[in-house]
Length: 105
View 1 (cartoon, one colour):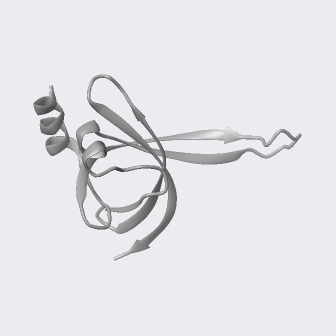
View 2 (cartoon, one colour):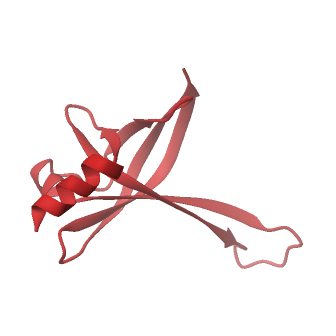
View 3 (tube, rainbow, N blue to C red):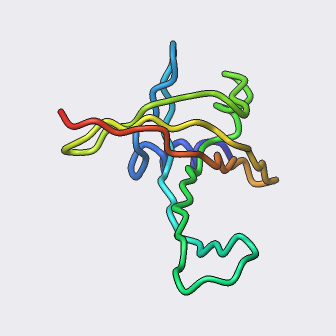
């Protein structure tokens, strides 16, 4: 079961660089609307980031809440922090992350 996950991450994954190691993850992103329980005419949006990673990597490197990592695209390097992890029985772990910062090259 591990081989298809590794292959999928190699083909479609983005490199996530933690302090002394790197793993691959597939970016997930959505936006939720927050109202904070009060009457308002304005919507407040929250961007939610997550990465699908191999559970074997999460266990091997003991990735947990509070761990920071970086990732790059063609224009910026982003810093994110793991807010929680969710494992499933198929060998995937979803890392839910908070955006910390981004800087252009």
